[in-house]
Length: 508
Image (cartoon, rainbow, N blue to C red; front, side, top):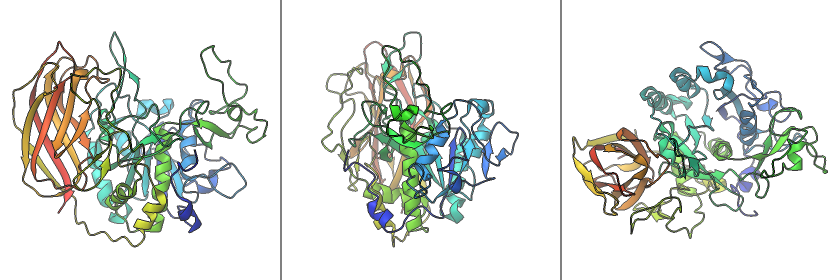
């Protein structure tokens, strides 16, 4: 829809194109000889986890017939412009390599070592990670992964810090596990590889500029970008596809639809009467936070080209400061699948925190605004000093969680350090027979909902040092009282909070 875009016209008119920016795309391989990609491809700098360590590969092309994702993702970042072919990426002169991390042919190699390796490399400015785990479980972060990311933000880009852009997930509606599965809402905080202060986590918008039907919520989301819907009744995203009508998302003949399926768009099946895609080299049905992430990665490439001296923290700050609030009338969300105690708000609308930042769990700080970010980046001088951390631990607790009551259980910690907050991390331990019922809220003036009641963790029991993060307090002062509220959202099962700790990431 007109007016709903990343607002980059002035940046393009000024000549920005992502030139000089190097991006590593962690995905399922790349058709590197594609007519709209090859000119920007970094030959010999790829990784292929189907090979023995150290996994270095010249091209890392797709290994299996279903390995289509990486080619589509990469086109959104940096498809070549003005070449008489296809379209253009957001940063059409940025260069890229691929880590073949997601292919079914490399799953056997998706060890912790491969996870660490795909996030490593001091010569890359940006890492795009359009992947995650199903959000009907809690997937912890390996400590070594946190360590490598911390090392990269301290040492990458000649000490300015590597920038990690990651998809928030597509699990707003996901089937729970267990013998009696139900459809519930996931949470980006359930994917441990997304719960760090080092990521820029991205939610997905549709063509009207509102949250898509699938985009996962989470207090760890930073900003929103465009992911589109499914390309039939509502627009998806057009991008590069594997070449030829016998592979990729765009194939001919069209598979016979079932009585309940939606038809394949003719553009996407090589039968478009306009003759724009008869050789099936592009697709019009790419969607998901997998699309929102590379669009944001391309936008960051433009920002870095405008000011190569920006640190990773500068980039996050500029994105938060310039994001455009969308769906501004959004008030409390009541999901019909999620019963709540009487008087409880399942999900709140937009808040304005004490530092003046607007935040909402489906959108983060809002829609990326490239021209505003580039304008702020030009001439921006960072003087933040090192990122500091402060942790306060409750010690052992025996706080009863009342059954199905809005007041829940509350406990407080006092943070003595007066930092300007950049991120907040919470670790929680509790006993409860059905984690789906448990809601977690963090209060420090405003409230941040870390975990909704009656969510997708149906049938799972207990938390032991589970980690959640929130960006809702960005820019505020850290010192003072922090309250954790634990709510039980359905009758019949109770529990006990046994420990929690808070870690503040910030600066003086």
